[in-house]
Amino acid sequence: MRLRLASVSVDLDPLRCYYQIHGQEPPADIPAQVILERALPRLLELFDRFAIKATFFVVGEDLAQSAAGSALLAEAAAAGHELGNHSQTHPYDLARLPRPQLEREIGDCHAALRRLHPQGRPPLGFRAPGYQLSPELFDVLEAHGYRYDSSMWPCPPY
Image (cartoon, rainbow, N blue to C red; front, top):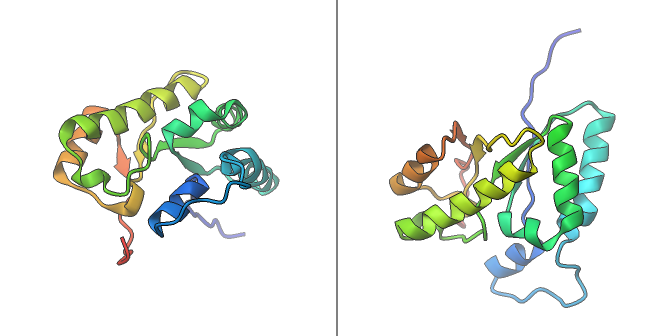
């Protein structure tokens, strides 16, 4: 059998982000944490069934709003999945924010993900909301010790 290698990553964006980018309010009947509390368990079960280790790019503020989602992500990290930084609040204009806001967006999510890891390891990967980057954003990531960015993706609407 030939070895096949693939990289699997999932952005755990809350549904509000998809409504926000289209200028709409999310319906009131959609649970706020449906991604962490319904989709994530299904993904973890699927990945476990096929022995896949994935990277989950996490929006930091969702962790404070979902104890169940936080617990699942801690279990995922303990099982060998990677937790990556997807910013604290998922601002689509992250790359254009002033340095102090960049520091908060990256730093707050960084700290939250580190607390979830069973050995307290910091996240190593980052993906920008909207996939936009800037030299200043890279400076902030480098200062936090990030080893890679996974934002480059041709996406003209962003």
